[in-house]
Image (tube, rainbow, N blue to C red; front, side):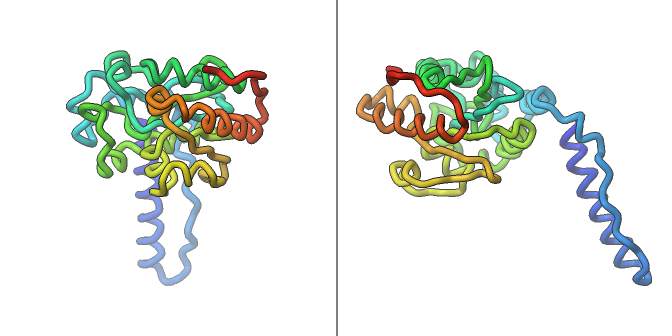
Amino acid sequence: MTKMNNHLKEQLWDMNEEVLEYLSDGSWQKRSAPSFDKQLDSLQSIASEVQACRLCQLGSQRTLAVPGEGSENATLLVVGEGPGFEEDRSGRAFVGKAGVYLDSWLASIGCSRQTNTFIANIVKCRPPNNRDPEPEEAQACLPYLLRQIELIRPQGILVVGKVAARFLLGKDEPLHMLRDKEHRYNGIPTVVTYHPAAVLRNPELRRPVWEDLKRLATLIDVPIAQKKSN
């Protein structure tokens, strides 16, 4: 119990300082909170918390939690909506057909989960029948993802699918409109595109995805393949 306790300690410290200031005769000077061993937080500690998490109903229905995977010093962070059937059984992010397809997208712009990419989801447990996450499920799980982003500090974020964009960016516009806009999450350039599963169902979406990937590659300064990956 490292980061969760650290957040609680910071909150209690602030509350204590406010109480002391209120009770004082005006001479109390509020102090900055100590570090509370923030350096102890890590992707591994977040993964351990995720695997033990029961903050929403998905935790009791899953086979395995899926914390996310990839490079700890990632240039690129990919965010999907949630694990599917294969991910639920393996505990790994994007390993089904859509995951294999996503890997080919990444390869086309010089990225991979083995070298410079971290892949995660809004929720870390599979929603029943692959339904969209409920708002309360996303709200319970989102702090894990936000901590991962804070630790990794990628140069760019690729958001795949409207659901992931809605929960991460707070925008509920149609996906084709989200694609055409510039986004930033906490100052990090963010590109929204179609989910790989949607492109597998509708190959006509491959061209717009390729345009999004090229734009992303320019933002994070990685090489672009000469030919589009199929």
